[in-house]
Image (cartoon, rainbow, N blue to C red; front, side):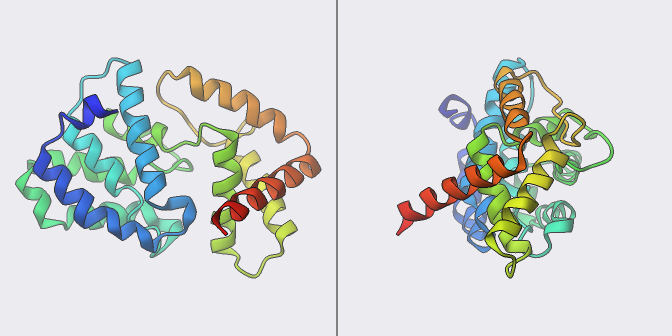
Length: 218
């Protein structure tokens, strides 16, 4: 990733890292700054694998802002995040009006449950990069996101909710779309679909994994 980060305007990168990244402390664990770093890395991996000719400053900005409004309203976070980016006057120093509109639309289009395809290659890159690509990510993010939405749920209710959600998203007819070639993601789909065939085994696996994570932080 460093080869791409080195090509980003250093003043833009410095502004985002110092003024935007700290805002992710307001989000729950599934959409915190570690997730943003992951999406940025995946964006550049997909660009390289698919030999795409794009503006790296725009990609970095889209990935950096795409979940910034998640803490305000998870169900409309893509619209809120896009609006927060578009109202950021500082970005006018780095992008033309046309580029800022593409960035805004890409953020609006990134959500996995969106009914239509992203309107630009930028939206397709970030939307694809935003997908989990390991079972461990799925176990962690689905649990903590569910806990944020349903703080009074029992542990078993959270595990069952995660099982239902992940089946709906990544199952054989799941709504999560991937718009670029990526062998790593294809391997992940095979693995997660195998795990999602048995609800009891999934719930046990997630419970054990979350317990391990929380023991590490104690």
